Image (tube, rainbow, N blue to C red; front, side, top):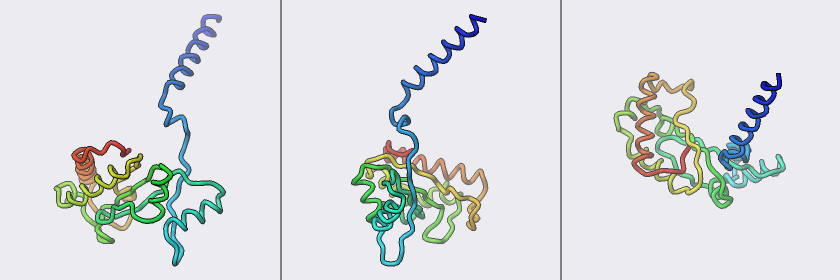
Length: 169
């Protein structure tokens, strides 16, 4: 019985040591973030500040929804997050404006110039950027099969590697 207790204590100590040597970044916990809707006449920073005022704290991350041809971090909200040194969350949909783009066309390289632009935008942000590619596949766009998606995702990753993007997750 004593051996089992000793083994349990040693396992617990080993777990605590392992957890304490983990990434300091992960030790900060979860980010408190949002995507904000702008009211008429409001810019993205005003919308962000208004929501922060209601909630009573600053957000740590701002999420942007973009199409392939609109992947900038322009606007007062993204600029404010950059000034704070905070990460962004960029979701890019397989669309040009509101027109659906097939994943197969992306995988075949038809939209490489847009992917390069996305990669450069993320790299130039300078802080961590959480990136998702076409996260809502159940939407109204019929963009292809699971195999097509995987191939398009590989093309997106290749664009990031070729631009030497190291700040994307």
